Each structure stands twice: as structure tokens, then as C-alpha cells.
Image (cartoon, rainbow, N blue to C red; front, side):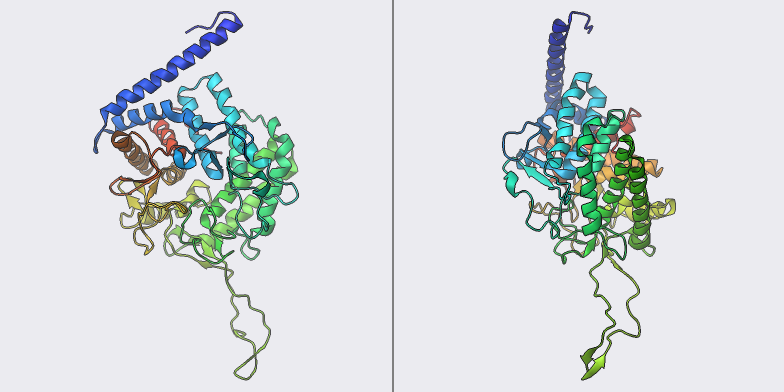
Amino acid sequence: MSFDAPDEQNERMKRIYHIYMYRLAAAAAVVLLSFRPAAGASLKDCRRLLKQHIYADYRQMFKQPEGGALVYPYITPGSRSYAAVLWDWDSWLSDVALRQILTDIGTEDDRREALIYEQGCVLNYLIYTSTDDGYMPMVVDAESDPMKIKPRDIYSTNMHKPVIAQHTAFLVQQSGGEAAWLQPYFDRLQAFIRNYHDHRRHADTGLYYWQDDLAIGVDNDPSTFFRPKGSSASIFLNCLMYKELRAMGYLAERLSLNDEARRYDRMADTLRQAVRQYCWDEKDGMYYSVDINLTEYTGKPDIIFGKPFVLHEGAPRHYPCIIQRIGCWSGFLAMWAGIATREQARRMVRENLLDERTFNGRFGVRTLAKTEQMYNLRGTHNPSNWQGPVWGVSNYMVFRGLVDYGFRREARQLAEKTIRLFGEDLGREGALHEYYDPDSGAPIINKGFQNWNYLALNMVAWMEKRPVVKEY
């Protein structure tokens, strides 16, 4: 279609064209949903159904603020359970999927429309972030009281996961490096990083830790779930923080703050070394979280056995943490983040990822190794279950690490499993779900979940050798 008419007519014709294409995609989705591919349907059919469903459905993630704590338009995870709520790492990775959709079928008008919602995901957090203490909420709900978002003691509980700079860097990168919109808010991002560095970082190891088990993303990860406060230097958290520091360096560079850019890069280098030193387990060939909740050696005498005695004086503790050999999928994030060495990655894949007794399920990566006593597939809210079920996001992030380290065959296998899982779910249910049985592919909970499930399209684009959008 040509748009050579005068401006007003030109814009009207564009709108008509976009409405037509949207309705066409929706109609195609209806036709394909009536096709209902059964279990064992061809991968081609699953890919086609997945694309048509998402292309027709994605705009339902766009939400306008309707009072309450949300001020800017934003992206929601979808389904009734998350209809009017902004989550930190959900909105970031949903946006990576959104950009793939727009790369596949979007127009310039579509991208301009989406940018308002994308930037709103960042700005809805930054407006609640003080340059004094850097606290940033992890969730903003339409029903939240803006005056009560900040807890009384901001250092005794968790805050926004370290993904806000990554989300921002992604948007800047997607816009060709244009960062002017960020300039008035960058000092808030810096305060956020200072909060983590000064109050959530273990001095003896240099690792970052959770203050408690509130909304850690991988909700009931046994390395943190129901464990003592301030005890878990989570591999999940530290991999996110490494990438966050790299993103801060990029943003500082785009804003011509070159000294700051170098400082953040040095912080990232230091953290990478700490993760390699303390979280890698040579015995298992795997990255793990570590326990930093160890008793301090004082060297002071106490009355023991009826006389002054210095406990453990002959052999004080010489190690700053204890590795937690709990097989969680988040150990593979060391590949996604680029922390693992090539040899470590080789061992992680061969000895852990491909082992059907532990992580390798028929439909993807079990979020907890099947051999762990805590393994279960229950459908739960508050917390969601990360003790075994397959999630679209964990499959995607492991896939991304495999691609980056050159494991193309394994990456393709994982992409095919994910596409088949979602394609068959759409065929049976006409919708996607939050998480699944790793071996039967049966949906477990939350019909209508959109969110990072749409990252399957990024996998499809990679398989079809088309332009692929990836996170910063």
C-alpha cells in the first residue's frame, strides 16, 4: 500500500491499514486455534500457531494507568492474576519479547506506540526512587497506596531486582543509543546501585545477597526460601547484578559520563571474579548459591569448662562462605550472564543440563533438579513454584546462554521443546499458562499468562535465521 496522499489522508489510511492487519491476524489466530494440534503435532504447525496467537494477542499487555500508584502506561504480565500490576523482571523480559514481535510484524507507528509503554515500565519505578537512599520497589500495583510503597526499614527486606538498568539499556540500545530521556533520572539509577553495593553486598566475598525471601523472582528457590535473613548469596541475584553493572557502564557512556562508565565496568569485573571464586563447584561442574550466614570468630576468651577458653583458637574459620549444592536452574545463568569460562560451560552442559535424571525434561529445563528432595510440581500462588516446573523464561535464558557459548545443537533442542510445549498448549487450551509439568507438558496454573512466554518468538526467529532481538 502506498501512502503518497496529503498528510491527513495519509494518517487516516495508515490507521485503517493497521486496523485491517490487526483484524486479519486475529482472524488467522481463530482459524488456527480451530486446528487444535494434538500432542505430537509437527514443529512447523506449533511455530505457526504460536506466531499467529501472539501477533494477535500481544497488545493486551499494554495498560494505561487508572489512578493509584501507576502514573505512566506500562506492560502487564497478562491473565486475570496480573491484570493491573507492574513487576520488575517480568516487564523487562516481556519487553524483549515485545521488541521481537515488532521486529517481525511491526510498523514504525507500532514501535512509537509501544515505546510509551516500554519507557513507562522504567519511569513508574524511577518516580518512587530517591537519590538519598536508592530504594526502588519491586512491584507497583494499581491498588497500591503511593504513600506506603516504601517499607519502614528499607534495608531489612528486598527491593527491585537488579534489572532496571538492563531494561533501560535495552531501550536505549533499541533506539540507536539515544539516551536523552534518561538524563534527568540517571542519578536515581546510581543511587539504586549504591543501595545494593553498600547494604546488600557481603564484604568478605564481594557477593550480593537477599535480605529475605520476599519476591526474589524465583520465589521458592530452596537456597533462599525460608532461610535466615541475609544468608543467601544467590547465584540468580549475582548473575543479574553482573549484567546490571555492565548495563550501568553502557548507560554512563551514552551520557558521556566516561569515568562513571569505567567505574561500573570495574565493579562488574570484580563481581565476576567473586562469582567464579565462590559459586563454582569443581566437584559437580555447576554454579551454586552460597551461604554467608557463618558465625564470626572473635578470638575473645569465654568461661568454658569453668575457665577462660578461646573457642576454635587452634583453627579459626578460613573460608567466608559455604557452597549450597542445591541443583537450581539459575546456576545456568552463569552462562547467560557471560560469567562462566568456556570449560565451565562445557561441564555444566554435559554433566548437568543434559542429564535426564536432574534438569533435562521432555519439555525443557526443570527449575529444580529432579533428584532434590524439595522437587515438586504443585500449582501454587504466593509463592509461584520454581521447585521443578518448566517456565518459559527459564527455558529462554538457558537457551540464550547456550547460543552465546556456541552450543547450537543443544540450543536448538531446547527451543524446539519450548515451541512444542506452547504450541500444544495453545492447541488444547487456546491460551498459554504460567508453568508446566516438564515431562508431560501439562499446564499447571494460571491460564492466559502472556509475559515472558512470548520470548518463544525470539527462539523461533533464531531457528528461522531471521533478525533476533536479545536483552542488553
